[in-house]
Length: 478
Image (cartoon, rainbow, N blue to C red; front, side, top):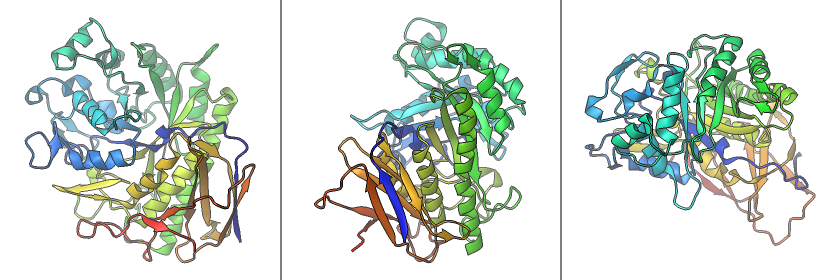
């Protein structure tokens, strides 16, 4: 019999809502066609931003959105994306398909999107802007922060007002470069750490924004990068950074042959699960290094790129990274969110790559049509954990395909409701399960309810012709 024990004695760790964040890059059809259709489009929109996508993301309480990249961030110059759209310069998106970027979606449009994604009476959908270190300058990033956040008279604040925005946006989260060990400049950790300190010095804390500086961190098991950054940014009274990023993608095969999003075998299913579960090992490894320098977890781990990465759909631009999204992706998402919940003492934020039409999307669009992916429904289920108190869980389960069959995380919300999220990775068997509660009592009269995402077909996925193949269903174990 599988057994899960949920402990209620220690509720000192809060699952930060920002763990449920998202990432949108100028890549393929994520921005253009995904969010932005323009004000003259027949697709219903508000100031050029399509309403159906906004409404869907509001339903899952999107807490933050990372932009403009990704690799694109380190070739993006923000001043190209302000002012009258017809006057904005064009550029080549060299990283993603070599297409022309017309900069019609820029700083004001992105921050308008975040405002539209914010629910009245709820915490704001926080913008998370990644600055250009690879090909930019210290002055450029410093002026960007001033443009967004300074409330007074200055060249950048005056320019913002000239462009139609009187009040500053108070953008809190700023990334200082992206993947600077790779597409962001091929830097060594020592070289980047020195550059980070120079850039971060001029990311000023204007007004009440409480700027949160995020350094480019490691990927996979590149532990030396994490150690170097923690060591070189340490000062007598703390650290010169607030967060350190980490990237890891779940790829069933290898970089040359990643595998199909929908045409896969049972062996490939379990290979994918093993790769996803490796996130636990990597978070522990990088977290242990951070603990050596920062036992109080003052520096947050920011897992700002994660998700599945397959071969693109046949007939699509290889540089657009468009892939379908099946039941397998739903389980990968749930496995990751369980891991992030359980390590929320250290993990401050995480961002799924990418929100619309790219990699492990929660939404796919085709002109005016829009569908929700299985991954979307996982985020809908898991939103109950946002800002709830973590309840430690211990899982004892059988094995499937060489890995533990069950994964779990649990929390208690402000009203005292307990939320338990479970994943069964076995493609064929239901898992009998006993749940024990330690250190608190569950009344016999307590109301128990549940939702489930499942299918008889492990390859099941939603299409524009059949958008409800995978969706949430009520679950009752009676």
